[in-house]
Length: 354
Image (cartoon, rainbow, N blue to C red; front, side, top):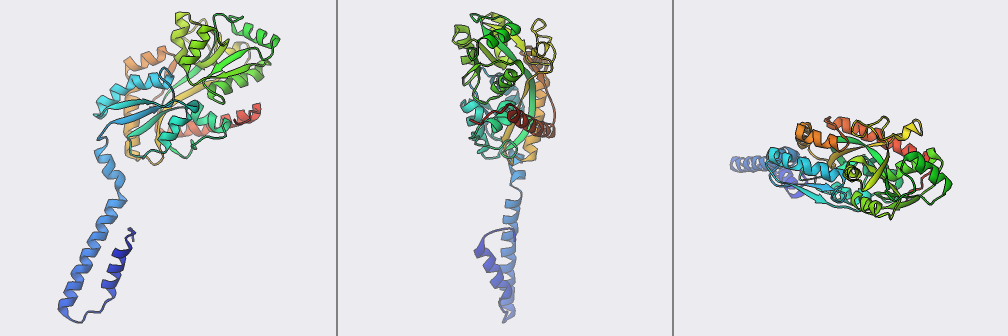
C-alpha cells in the first residue's frame, strides 16, 4: 500500500471482508470498494510523482542564488555576470543573496537546509566544499551528502600579494625576509582553515619559514588593509585581486599556477622558486540534496550556455578564470577527488581542526 492513511486502509479491509447478504448490498459494497480504490490510486499518483509535477511548472517564481561571501568575491562577480542571462532564459528573476560568514559555511548551510525545489541554490567553491570539512570542527554540512551538484563554472589560481609598504617586493625577497624574521610576516586570508590559508600553510612547509595569520571575512577587506599597510602580505584568488594589482594599490609577488599565466606574463610562479608547488581552485553551483534531476540538467544547461557566451567568457578570462562547461557527473567526480586530496594534505601538514 503506497499511502499511510490508516483509516482509509481499514475501510477498504472492512468492505472487502464483510459478508454480502443480498445483491443490492453487494452492489453497494462493490461501488464503495471501487471508490476507495480510486481514492488510493489518486493518492499514490500524487505522492509518487511530486518531482514530475514540480519540474513541469519550474521555474514559477524567482530563483535565489546564495553567495556565501561578501560582494566582490569571485563567486559574487561571476554570479552577477551570468545572473541576468539566466533570468532571461528561465523567465524568472535571479536574486543574488550575499550571506557571508564562517569562511562561507553559513551561506552553504542555509542552502543545504533549503527545500530541494530549485528555487534556492548556492555558488560554492573548493575552499568551503573540500577544505573546510577537514580543517573545521563545526562544519554544519557534509559536502558529499548534503548537496546536489549542478555545474562547475570556472577554475582559477591564487595570487600572493603584498602591501606597497612591505619590506619586500618579490616572492624570493618575501621568503628571505620571513626566514630571517620568524613569525613577523603577517598574512591575510579569507578565514582560518580556508583554502587560501591552507595553501599558505603548505607554502610555509615548502619554504621553511613561519608567519602570523590574519583571517578576514572576504577579499574586499583584505585589499583595504593591504593597501593601508595593516598587513604585509595576502593570498587569494587572482580574480578578486586583479583590479587592485593593476591599479597599483597592492603588489603582485607570484601566482600559484604551475606555469606563467598569459594575463600576467611578468608574474613569477611559486614553482619557479619552490619546484613542484602549486595551488588552484574551482567554483560552481550546488543545490540542496534531492534536487530533481530535470531541474539539475536545466540549470546545468543554462549555466554552461551563459559561460560560453563571448561577453561572459572574455570577462572571466580577463579576471584570471578558466571557464568550465561540464556535466553534473564531472562535478561529482571533481568534488570526491579534491575532498580526498585535501584531506590528505591537512593530515600531512599537521593542521589541527579549529
